[in-house]
Image (cartoon, rainbow over the protein chains, first blue to last red):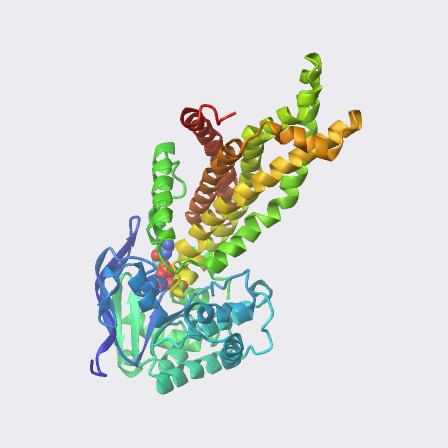
Length: 276
Length: 264
Ligand SMILES: Nc1ncnc2c1ncn2[C@@H]1O[C@H](COP(=O)(O)OP(=O)(O)OP(=O)(O)O)[C@@H](O)[C@H]1O
Ligand SMILES: [Mg+2]
């Protein structure tokens, strides 16, 4: 395989829930070692896109390839192998609430490596230090703030040193300084380990920093796709609003605020928008 | 779990379709149980949660039931002047039916509700998806391990229940006639063979399977927040105890058919 090939390919993928068509024949590629930032209004299917990539949801139509393997054709053992090479940060962290912070990060290491307990402890400390949480090893997830949970989730997603990293809103609930640190961590990973990334974010400055490619999802379609400079040139009103309006928001803007700044808000935000 | 996304929580599913889904879930559990990795660590942990932690409940209930049954037995036996048979009659009653069924119902209350709520909570907070994202077969890791743990824990708990029942019976008896512990147990086990003990006790493996499967299924398919978790928990107890009582009739029938003499 050449280095210029695609780590991720979305080929005319559609996904509906009940009557609502969330994705309508969406196609995009992410080149190996590059970062793709997905933006879009609340409820446009960004989280759904990431879950499709991991096989947590099945597409109604179309094909999804990860490292040239169509994931829908895999049996559960095959899926396990592919997922070992992927890391996923959930939008609401999804930490195991019966396990401590350290145990959450150690979980994938215990499962999938032959590392000794001492090596695991070292690795866990290292991962947590990267996200600025070296002091919280023994806390339980429910005793953490939303932003801290998010960072533990990232440390857990990074535990197996995945070659593909899917991140759902890494900076929601984080202050501007921590946001920059997380951005830097992601950029370092891309530079040092050639990690392929798909990052869902509402934070345009972050997207400009991290993304080789930016992608705006709107009403089930990809409205715009390209580098930040290319999107800046876009004539489309919504794309322009995205690139400009969101920039004026504080760096830790919640999805609700950046979305409602553009116009009508989505029903679901009322429930979710509050959480970090 | 991916395919459960389509279930609409508001629809009242017919009992039959639900039963069909639970059967499919059970079949899948049996198939997956034989596939590696075998999750032994998790099975042991779940045996601790379902079995060890149920001990206080099972033991106190066992003693209390033994006392009550013994009083009833004495009332009956006295009429025929057959007081010497009291321990044996109690042992037969405990071992053949009361012990297994009571243990099944107690565990479906305690463990079934727990599994329903725990898995339901994990489902709605995306922890099940998180397991999958970490390349773990969540169905094996969560459901199959709990089902196996229930199947192992129940016969052991039943044995302990039976034993506690006899202790209760002994306590009740010593209060009236000062029979020695050794004589009491000697009389109790006099008429009971291994088969008499083994069949009803092994029956509870099926109870364990029912409790584990039904409550894992309901937890796994939970939708809709805290209310959904509560519903999963309640329905786990209701469904598994109902099913257990009905299946028990069948099992007793089968035991009688296969071992006319063995089924006491
Ligand atoms: N499991 C599910 N069952 C039913 N509908 C779902 C499910 N998951 C997502 N949806 C629907 O799909 C649509 C897209 O959801 P998604 O979570 O992907 O939005 P999003 O773009 O991530 O929004 P946000 O920025 O608020 O996180 C929403 O209308 C949502 O209601
Ligand atoms: Mg989302």
